[in-house]
Amino acid sequence: MHDLAALEADGVTATFVASTEFVSATDAQARALGFASVPAVYVAHPIQDRTDAEMAALADEALPRVLAAVTGDPVGG
Image (cartoon, rainbow, N blue to C red; front, side, top):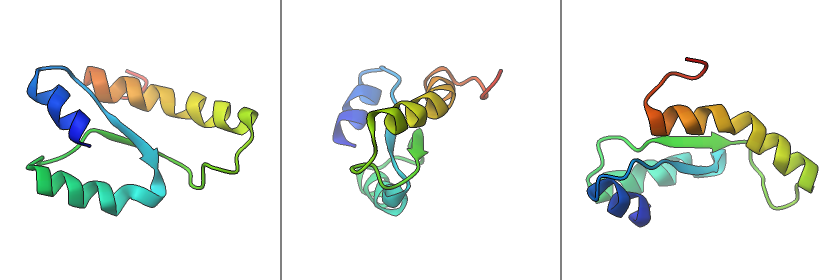
């Protein structure tokens, strides 16, 4: 989250990607760092026991949302 704050402060558009387990922690950290909202993409939890194929499927599913977060375009837009 600190890296995201530093990038955004330097004018670099960034987004945060994490599993759904970390939604409330992300919100708390964002408030502590003074973010009104954090551009974030969440994927299904858990991550650690997933196969390579499962991780690739999660990444494929998340990619349009990541691109939308960094470009400001709606998903599919």
